[in-house]
Amino acid sequence: MARPLLLTVFCLVIGAMSAQFGASLSAQNATGTIVGHVKLTGPNPGNPIIRMGMDPMCAKLNAGKRILHEYVVVNESGGLANAFVDLTGSLPNSAAPSSPVVLDQKNCIYTPRVVGARVGGTLRIVSDDPLTHNVHGVSPKNPFNFSEQKAGASRDITLKGPDVMMRIVCDIHSWMVSYVGVESHPFYAVSAADGSFKIANVPAGKQTVRIWHERFGQLTKTVNVTAGGTATVDFAYTGKEKPSTARVQDVAIPLGNAVAEMRLSVLSQ
Image (cartoon, rainbow, N blue to C red; front, side, top):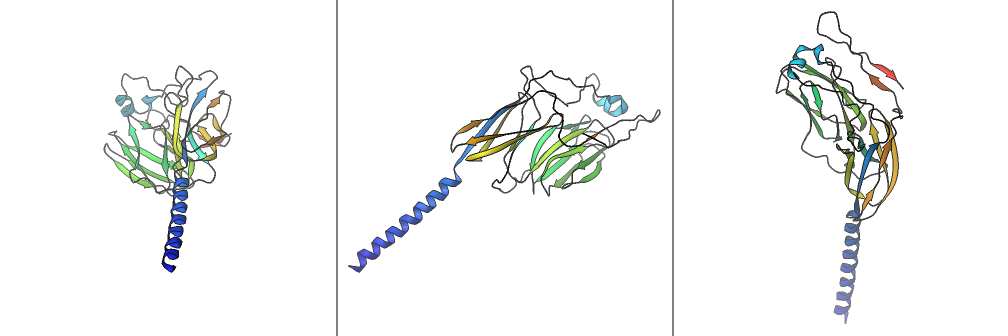
């Protein structure tokens, strides 16, 4: 009599543990996907030409090309590229990827213009140019400032704290700029050439989606994410928006006949 009773109790305990484990696993797998587009509904302001002639080496690398600044990159349908998209609020963390995020200096331009990276991860800055570049990370959490003087140069930076957005400039060539969104979680993306973005494996529930653009500032929306589902959230800038926080402006000053520049950091609203 006692033996069947013990067996019954054992089975009940195992069943309860299995149910709890299954519920925990189900909760972990309760994720969905967020997709959307970022658009510019107002007129395209256009981008000015970069004056590469301020450094003959940069001009030589770009001979025959008409290189523009990439302040606002819009396609024929109004899709806005290079907007950084992330989730805000309390979010689960995970280990940073072991592979580095690579920022390249090629033909006196930083590539990519906008990229995301993780706290604890590596930002690898490389140069393809046979000339000296300065690499200056303007960030309260991840500051750095060094030079790379030849093609093939490379340096790894370990990112220590979140920063949306970290600005990277070259103090020799004032037109060179890139932005890195440093996140403590993996839920971020950068809008593609058509303005589209996708963030996968998002925890189910109400989420706040934020976008940032270097010329138009931030916008936020909330969206409800269901387990196994795809939530759509679109954003539109009119072109009249301004960044909500002060930003650094660059002023290039030719110094006589010498090929040199000074960078003036001017805070403006």
